[in-house]
Image (tube, rainbow, N blue to C red; front, top):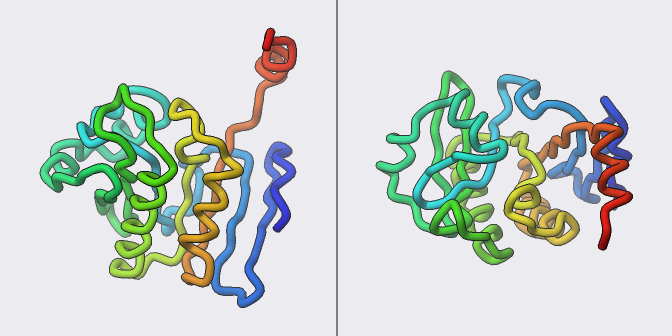
Length: 176
């Protein structure tokens, strides 16, 4: 499968042979995705959402109490509905200060898949889940996405912000 070129505004899709799902990469703001697409991101059981993109989800959709009332555990998925949009909260760790593992991410994605099927959702947009502050490796996360959603009829669009030139230069020159 091909991977996106990650140029500003670019979009690249990897599609399975039976045309039942698509993994698409977009460079841009996740919150600019079409309003009829569901959103997903990772949280902890304590629903703190105090860092990274989770802060924006908390501000955009509120509902922390609603999420806490669902009592979801690591490996499960909480959900909010705002207008016609579903927002899926992948519970990948116990506390905000912990790090997830690939198994907890996979289990939460499987739970999300069953919720998507229940809710009639066929398109989900997300960031590179687990790969920001949580430090998972995208090549392994994308394989999990393919295993869970391949042949499901649920298409996934992964958004990445464009890398600023100074950030790229700092990363290239950082001591290893």
